[in-house]
Length: 204
Image 1 (cartoon, helix red, strand yellow):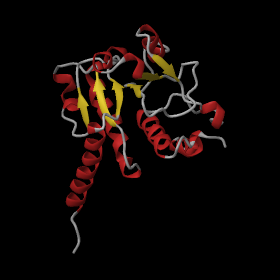
Image 2 (cartoon, one colour):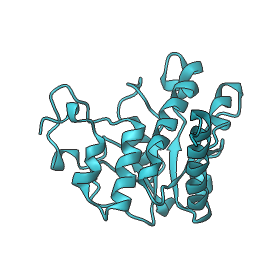
Image 3 (cartoon, one colour):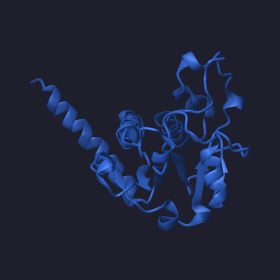
Image 4 (cartoon, one colour):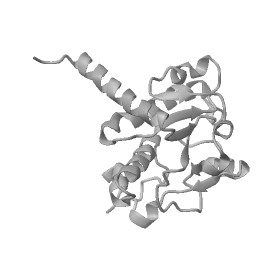
């Protein structure tokens, strides 16, 4: 008996949702900060494009036994953000992560941070900036973390990789999410985790 593609898709979605529901019950969270709409000229498309980036994080959930549950913070409570609020894989709120979690538990990941991450900390809630292309303001996530007095770290890309000349050290949301989940599930194996960066971006 063959399953139709739609049935397979629905089953895969249910499995993803079940894994994330377990993570939510265990208070195993990862935050995406969605406060950057004003950094883009076409800010009416910000949430639509961000939704595509966020949902791409969940295409590889089958790899992980216990993926972290994603909380989308600082989402405007208006019609523009409707696509994000209807996501079956995340919890969306207009509140800041500062309103939801203890400050000492938060770590903002920023490519501009001078504090290089050495290992995945299981008692930490990591924050990823909801950014998908160059913004008007430089070092945006680092400045935000500093102003909010939150710990901040960058990934040790230079320590483990030699990026090709045309590659950016600013990774996509799904790449950073998968790096974190791989670290979490492989006892901080950076070589395995950084395979989430496409080979075309690595010179070795």
